[in-house]
Image (cartoon, rainbow, N blue to C red):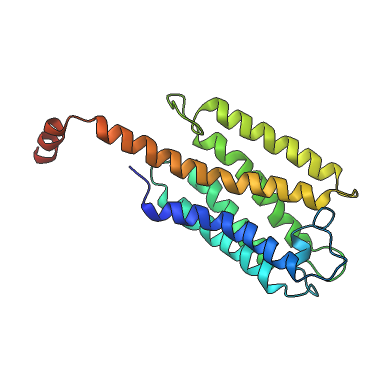
Length: 207
């Protein structure tokens, strides 16, 4: 079952919401904001300047992941559930914004849920018989290893000077993967359909 055309739009919308949100929000921050050191959540926390920009971006990410999961009928249920969990996590991160000072447990819980769910998503998508990137097993393993490496960097940078950069790297990587999966599935199933004998296909439809 070929993914609907709108799944391309929803998958791309998640990436645009993430990148557009943080880039637009950064432009209106006071001079002291450093994207290398400070997190995306700092752009949407209570008290941040024009916090609605990043908050809207996070809501877009969450809704887009949910829409993409709903439209990917070609995938097995576990993969769609993981992507949907990533969407729920995005909505939770936006709704449970960080306070002006300190941190909110609910915000951190949703952030962890999103990272874990989207790290497992490529593993649930891969198939032994797949021939093209990013649906092969080795692609899923590479993505999982990259997520682990980026997460280790993020944990190491919690009190360091590159926390914002590490967070942006892992969120970008995990938001990009659904886009690649949707494009690959549409390409693969289009190629499969083109290889089917038209006469046999018509016979099958009339039987």
